[in-house]
Structure formats: structure tokens, C-alpha cells
Length: 469
Ligand code: NAD
Ligand code: UGA
Image (tube, rainbow, N blue to C red):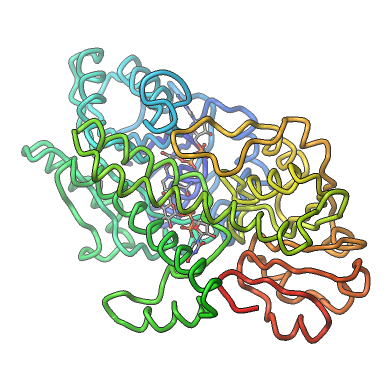
């Protein structure tokens, strides 16, 4: 039986390995992590991450060919294929701080693999890493290993949160990069054989290592660029009376442009878009390509602009003062169907509103109060891009009300900001919300999910992104 071990039981490691276990009963899959609470949660009825459909997959294979363990060294030593899916955050100190990827976790995983391995291994980069990381990993493994063979593959993950199970079940493509040597090619084929259990062969793309590593950064940069492009248009729509949804529909009908990922919003969030673009910017700078770096940096700058523009619009339309006014925030997660708040625009918007002395009340169906408090207590990194929104003091977390019900959040509020596109906000009793708010009652729809005309009929003053008033 082939044995797979995945280091890192996070948003990627957990679901990806659960899918491999579901589709490959002839493979034993062990997901290991240094975090005891995380592994305990994977072994419990309350999984550490919320993903539609994931509970069923995990419950079906856990204890059969899917295992979660903190015994990292044992399972790494026993595995034939080791996926490394540890976090690769942005560096906060030293050279490249605020842009470069911090590979501390990756390097320590690689050193541990070298230490404990006694048999040949295929080591798979699942984490998103800078191009050429495989070369560094190869050096660490071969210089510290015990004379055994390591083949490094790059197999970046393209799943999106909230649709992870669906994306893993039917990936647009699986990308595997490896060395262009016979052993490298054999390793690629061994990994391709795992995915071939359920992914059509034509959707399994094989490339050299550097193309695979760079394709991941490029894919995220292109995706985020589309959002910044439509968000830039939304500002122009507001200034001219055009409607961004109509513009997006009209341009998306061009088959060369396509309709996906053109939803204007308060800004993109999530753990990866900003981090990966900044990393790309850094790589361009290091390779003497300042113009290319500046081009991609603008995607992040527009995203910051969109968040600060949203806050300014709230303050400006509410007679230039929100001091002492209750503002309800509906949705804190960075997108619907996830409890993840990493880099959520809600953090910057909440901090912006607090700075103008609003009384903020937040509701999100999936994010715990503890998580929101943590997010609001953290200083934003002093990153290289201009901070359009200054960080609020850590004490700001204390100033926010965290409630379990959207009607409680909006009661006696002057304004409502919709920051996550949860379906339940579309179906809310907006008449009831209006009746319990201070008048004039404002709605700022940061996700364009409500029908502004219907709400205006009730009596609300509605601001949508990129839409006429
Ligand atoms: P995560 O923070 O949820 O999980 C990473 C896990 O690795 C943590 O549980 C941590 O405890 C563990 N870890 C760190 N060092 C370890 C070590 N030495 N030994 C054992 N465990 C260790 O991160 P994530 O969201 O799963 O992302 C992982 C990687 O995948 C990142 O590079 C990210 O850019 C990339 N990625 C993420 C997504 C996503 O949707 N979140 C999608 C595609 C790619
Ligand atoms: C994104 C990519 O879509 C994945 O392919 C990639 O694997 C992943 O990053 C990663 O590398 O981590 P994710 O961040 O989970 O996935 O979610 P997305 O659906 O891409 O949304 C990201 C952000 O963009 C969210 O805040 C979302 O609300 C926003 N968005 C998305 C828009 O504002 N408009 C859109 O049209 C689409």
C-alpha cells in the first residue's frame, strides 16, 4: 500500500488529503501537524475548518485510510510521498519584510524530513512558494539526508475556500512540476497516478519545477487582478452613473474576457491573494524587473483603495460624522461559506469605522467572537503598500459589540454595512430591520447582494458598489 503523509493539517492539507483518501482506498493517508488542538479537532465531530461537504468526506474515510496525527516524525519516516502544506506567510521582519514569503515553516519541515527519512521519498510542495524554492529544498534534503533519494515535485493547490470539496472533486487542472530527469519524470508519474484515480488524464498537466511554482503565483495574480480591475471600474461607475453589474455583464459576454470573477466588492480578502502578489512583486524586484513589480503591486493598491473608499462613503453619506452612531456590520468572513477571516476586508472597514468613533456591532454566522476580537486586536503589518487605512489601536476590539443575530446587530443602528455575501442576508426581513433602525436608515452593500430598489421602497437610503444612487 502506498503511504502518503501530509505535513500541515490546515485549509489545504486537511481537505486535499481527505479527497485523496476518499478516491484512493488503496492509499493510506496520514495528515500530521505540530498543532495538537488542530489534530484533535480533525479527529472530532467539530472539524477545525468549515467547508460544505467536508464533514461527510472526512467521516467516510477517517479511521479507514485517513488518519490525523501529531506524531509527525513517525509518519514522515514511513511515507513514500510527503506533501508539505505548511503556511508560507509574508515576512514581517528583516530582508523583504512585508513582501517576501516567510519560508521558516517550510524549511523546518524539510530539515525534519531529512533527519527522519531512511527510505527514498517524493517530497511534494503543496504550499504556495516563491519560484525556485524547490532548489533550496533539494539542497536542504540532500545535504542533510542519509544518502537516500529525494525527488522534489511542485504540485500547487488551486482550491478556493468555501468550494474546496467541489474544487477538489472536479479540479480544472492538477499541475505537477518536476525535474526533467528520468527520476524526476518517474516521480511526476507516481504523483499523477494518485490523481488519476479520479481526475481525467487530460486535466493533469506536467511541467518543469519552475513553471509549476510560478504558475501558482501567476494564477492568483491574474484572479486578483480581475477583481481590482472591476473594482477600479466601480469607482468610475459611481462617478458617472454607469452600473458596474451591467458593465461586468456586458464585458463578460465577450468570450475572450468571460463572466467569472468580475463581481465588484468592498475588496478581496483571504489568506493568499495579497500575500502571493506581494511575493510576486518581491521576486520581480529581486530579478531586476521594477516595472513588472510595480504593475502587479497596483493590484494590491487598488484593493486597499477600494476598502478605504467604502469607509469614506459611509462617513461621507452619513453627514460626515458617524461618531457615537451605531453601525451594524453583517458578515466578517472574507467570503461566504467559510469561517476564515484572514485578510478579510471587514477588518480594515471595522477599524476605519472605529477610527471615526462609530459604535460597531458585528454579526457573522460562522465567525466566533473570539476570532473577531483577535483579528481586530492585531496591528496591520507595516507593509510596503501605502496604508490608506491607518491601524486602529488594539483596544478597538473591546469597542465592538459581537452579536449572534443580524436583527440584534441592526437594532437601533443608523447604518448597515454588508461585508460578506452570506445567503441569509439576501433573505432577511428588511422591513423588520428598517422598522428597528434610527432614521434615516442607511444600507451600504459591499457585496451587491441586495436589490437596492426594493430596499429604497421600504425607505432605506442605499449605497451599492458601483451603482447609481
Ligand atoms: P494553514 O495555516 O491553515 O495550515 C498550515 C498548517 O501547517 C498549520 O496547521 C500549522 O500548524 C502547520 N505547520 C506549520 N509548520 C509545521 C511543521 N513544521 N510541522 C507540522 N505542521 C506544521 O494554511 P493553509 O491555508 O492550509 O495554507 C497552506 C499553504 O497552501 C500556504 O502556502 C497557502 O498559500 C497555500 N494555499 C492555500 C489555499 C487556501 O485556500 N487557504 C489555497 C491554495 C494554496
Ligand atoms: C483564491 C483562488 O480563487 C484559489 O484558486 C486559490 O487556490 C486560493 O486563492 C489560494 O491560493 O489561497 P480564495 O481566496 O479561497 O481562493 O477565494 P476566492 O473565491 O478566490 O475569493 C477571494 C476574495 O476575492 C474573496 O474576498 C472574494 O469575496 C473576493 N472576490 C472574488 C471578489 O471580490 N469578486 C469576485 O468576483 C471574486
